[in-house]
Image (cartoon, rainbow, N blue to C red):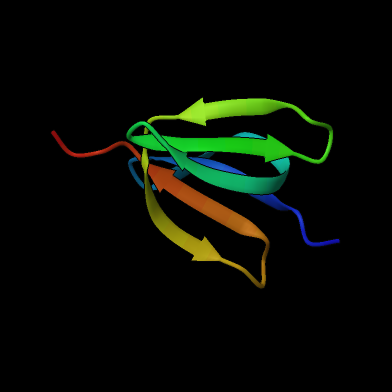
Length: 64
């Protein structure tokens, strides 16, 4: 399985926002996340980092 968990960085701490993410699509200043169950979530964020071996996606709020 190649799904990932998506996290929003809150300071130095990652906060889980979605598990089993299969698709990440850029959309309107953020990203649409879709998991293997068809659930969708939009995050207004930028990519902070990717840990592909660990199956983790890290986002952070865009700087103003």
